[in-house]
Length: 110
Image 1: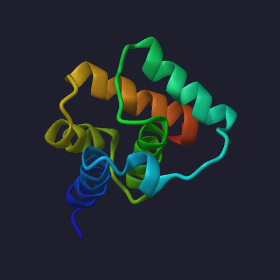
Image 2 (image 1 turned 30 degrees about the vertical axis):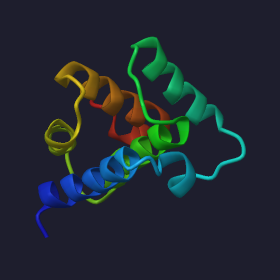
Image 3 (image 1 turned 180 degrees about the horizontal axis):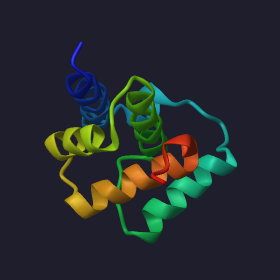
């Protein structure tokens, strides 16, 4: 399986579900957020990045790390987000950086 296509597919599914308005109801049903979740959302909020719901944004962060766990590079994830997001390249970079910082710090560039 092509790593880029796997990353794109994972992110696309998340984006499509969120765009359909199912983000809050269909994905994460968390009653409360972890410190990592709150830190991730704070970075998005501090950078004026809008999202469908907090649960959708958190799921997107986990999908980013899941794609990287499956072998996608930061570049692969960035390309996939560019294809499926209406955010600017800079904002996509913020989302990726926030996800890595909050959910998969092992992928922090050296």
